[in-house]
Image 1: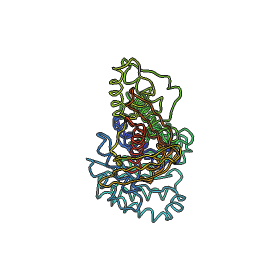
Image 2: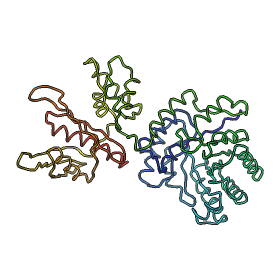
Image 3: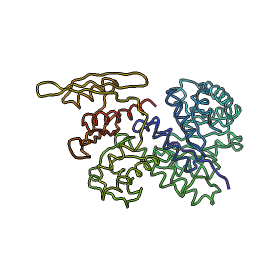
Length: 469
């Protein structure tokens, strides 16, 4: 029985997609969920922005326990920055991506086949200086020139590549055609049988799952799939087929299929398009407004209502929210959806504050335009902003925008008294929309303006935290 390697491409695919991308935190959470499934390899995108992408790679490396992390090195590029980002991993993989078709060679790389072969040789050799796990990915292989592909594979193997992956980017082959293509490649380069070779299939004709299974039947040792539908083979479908029928064609995986559906569901909640979900916050669901909870409700029930409100909670955030919910529910008969909204704003995804409130002054009246003077502290520096506005709260928000140099759309603003009397405490929830996402902040003070400023600043800090990662 051959134990094949399963490689998930979700994070890499959603790092460059036009319709959907993941935030830094979402990429990290998805990688941790895939690691819990015991996926053999998790693919990340190549380093494009050295600071952010290197930090992501380092963060994923420290977060995962079982999976191997694979990162592409552009053809002809120096692999040392990528290897440095992966340096804390016990083991890692560098991927060298080469064009298989003449169209990609000439129009994407502006090179002839001979030059591509030389670049593959030098890049693989450079990668071998940092790891003995180097993968060659042949893009658009099924539409490529067979002679050129053979030369590319030969150069990669001579240079020390240990895995070769054929990518069917067109996705126009039926399973039988794809199997025949693979057999031709094995005949042309017999050394492929001595290493691990694998496949990555486009789902253009909804045949990716079937083509991957056909490849396994013909000796593939690694497959690429995705937990989220990104025009490739489905991780859930392929692993379910292997679990049910793998013995008949002699393969198995180490993936935890027993928890596959639940984990894929969690991953999909992170991966829904940006215009329908936030990373910290709320999209809003009017049907959730009538929901009530009691101290007898389970953690799952509380998380379910939070999801109806539009929140996507990590396991850690869900635990914090539930703990805060229990404290409140123990003191009153029912907890409303609005109260849960405030709990999430307070307990979920708290971040280090880049900006801290030092003081503020507001002037308002029937005969003057409202004005606010706000002083914030960032690191060891105090910064002041003065602004006019339609009321003292608007003026204070505009003063903060002046200080931070950032403008965010105010998505929601709620004020309520939580105690009675002349010195009643006010609770304020502010929701800001930035880059298609909503970030919530909470403020508490006996002064409504103070509560509002603190809530606004709390939300701003969350946006800034994610933008600067």
